[in-house]
Length: 475
Ligand SMILES: Cc1cc2nc3c(=O)[nH]c(=O)nc-3n(C[C@H](O)[C@H](O)[C@H](O)COP(=O)(O)O)c2cc1C
Image (cartoon, rainbow, N blue to C red; front, side, top):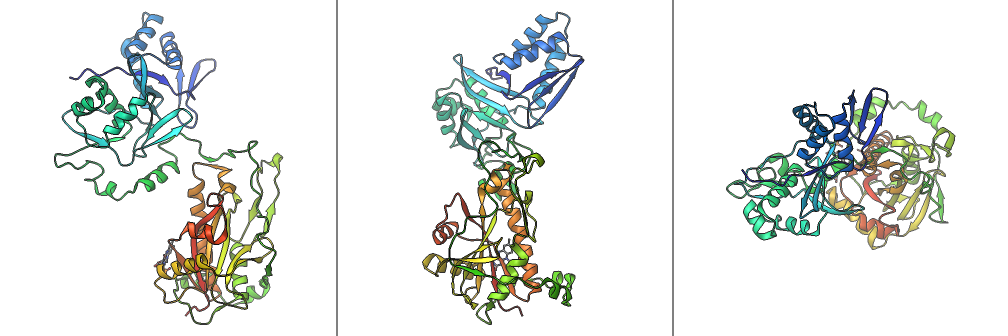
């Protein structure tokens, strides 16, 4: 058996120990909690050393036994294993007395990997490096741990793993002794950052497994990071910038002095219409027609009114913990944030000049932004192409998110929430368009750079996240 280098065990820097009369409560914020009833002196010593860091499992056990001569070593090792399974430990590989790499476990249940040293290993295509305040880290959405690369030479060892390596070849190429290379590979494998190759050269999980073959890198990362489970980053409506940055107001500054007041529909008249809600639901469908009777500005106004007008805006009220302006529209939005703005590229609408407009949701007006120039025409053409139509839609509606309105409030899931909100709005658009006998169709792709060029808006401040077409005729 290969002599591995023992890891130094420690708690994550965020771990805390609380004590009441009879028990200790060990907690790693955002994640696990372990209640230790009637802790013995040996367990207390073990915990102290884990907080201080810098001891291997054998050294920890020895220190714990020293504190209580009658302690049972099996029970101490068992307790350490329990902490490991709860995902509470960090494992540091020290080389020549210095930390080389540290695996910080972020989710449970966790177990150190076991590797077959006859096999070859390569970096997972889902693994990635990035800079953090603690230094360079490696993460992988398949795993339940993050690796901190304490020593720059760890980066060079990782570089060798972009190609398939045996333990021997990694040791030769990186200059790491076999035991060190093995310990490093074990840490990487424990975070699922490397994958084994089969004899024909395919990576076992990523090329042989039909499920994994169909995952793209960014999709799996987005999925794992925007859901709870295998990370321990802040999550949910945490008001994470409260007291640090002001939240964005609900209503944007006017974008133009040229404004077109839209007619407000008569709700009473609509209530007497014979149209039935369930008929609308039943009849809803995607209609890809244009070039016939164009949509009218009155229809467009009514459509926007039932989809996206602001019905109410509630002011900030610190006492009620309403830290940002909440708003109400006909369709719902997570946290009543309503970060989505609508931009209309109008190609054919009676009584409305072709051009690019912004819908001012509070005043129920259109703000004129520009005539149809190259980028606006290209957006219409993109819409035509991805709906296989012979002419562009009467109106292309672009859903743009004011990102910081939502990311001020939500940690880890802001972008995923915006996409959910866009989906909600799509359905509202479909139903309202069906009720108004218009031709609706959602679009699955759009060019966000083109949108930035067409509107002059900063890509990172407010940008398109969805597109929807609407035309006059609904056969
Ligand atoms: C998110 C989303 C994206 C879509 N993208 C497109 C698209 O790019 N082009 C298109 O012609 N239809 C698109 N559609 C419409 C679907 O093709 C349509 O909903 C589906 O074929 C079912 O037909 P139905 O809407 O008539 O029930 C999209 C629909 C949704 C919900």
